[in-house]
Amino acid sequence: MPNQQLQFLQEKIKEINSAIFFNLSDSVLKFPTTLVSTLKVDDYGYVWFFVKKPKQNINQFETEFPVRLDYFKKGTEYFLQIMGKAWVITDPEEVNNFISMTEEVKLQDVEDCVLVKVKMMKADFQQTQSRNSNSWWANAVYYFFTWFRSSDYRPSTYYQVS
Image (cartoon, rainbow, N blue to C red):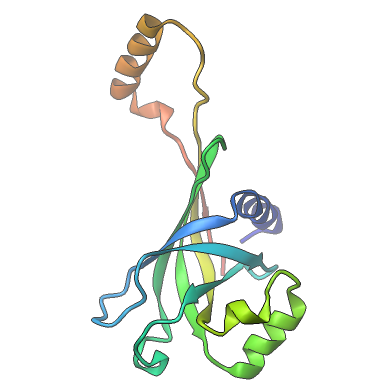
């Protein structure tokens, strides 16, 4: 992913911070859909966050799987959908190294959580229209015509370049 696109995505993810995490794996035992708070987006295109540790033994879960992250925050004029590959970080040395580099992480938060990193493979950025204060008739006409004009919907899509 070119550096300028990565910086743009880092900025937008940092502004919203929280996302809905979807595990897209076909595995029987998988991490559930949950709300996550982004800890870091590094310069290699990885999004780092914690998920709540499941009741089952963590070694019974897949260590890598496809995911989707939906970033949306009420009041922002955009949303972001990221598709990628996730890795569960179980190596204690790597987890401790990450925690020591990140000031926002508190040790008590880590005990019942699992560190996950997601490589961004595709990112869809969609600017939403701000609601204007026209009359109800003008809004009705606008929405009626936007149903039939599919050319208005043009999200910016970024792909991982290898």
